[in-house]
Image (cartoon, rainbow, N blue to C red; front, side, top):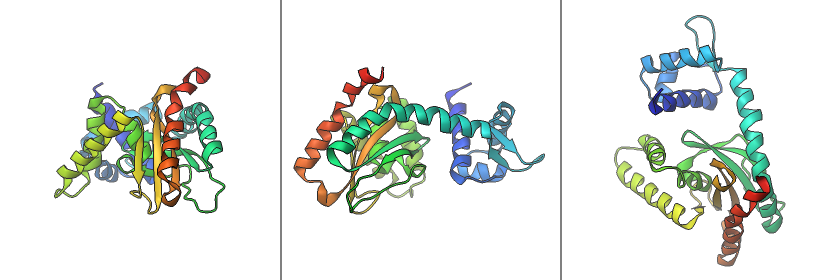
Length: 245
């Protein structure tokens, strides 16, 4: 099976997960931007494997309980266990909101959040999603992926943009990912939520290349001194590798 087929299969699954409702073949083809014959072949294989279910013959499709169980109780819990020491350490040191994000397709899904006790805060709920290109979590992950995989994700993220300006946006994203990889952490300031900045580091040193941890901070609390302290604390991720081995 080629990499392209796997990529399309997961794109189909991601559409079903994102919409959270039964979809017809035509709807799935439209949402995934894939040809109907391709989606039909993918769905047949996924149905035979037990990962999707079809409502009656020729009916709409939904995710199966088998896939939901694999997703929620397998990967999530394992990643949370690895990330928890770092998240708790950052929360104790700075009392800012700490997030765990997982890359799924071209989106980041928030898998765990430790909330700040400070009155002025921005909290995202577990299960929420954002495009990887606009979040520090997403940039931290994608910047450290193999070049071929990174290029595919960047192309897919930019494909939905208006044709005018698409090339410039893609170039800007590629430059930001290169800068992120060079410095070891990602930064996003008021691109997702006004008044909020995020700093993030990938969890690849802990054996989780598709996960990252971030801190969400109101910009008025992110002084140059505080930013430097947070970055230094987050870049110590590698020290947790031995503790989680």
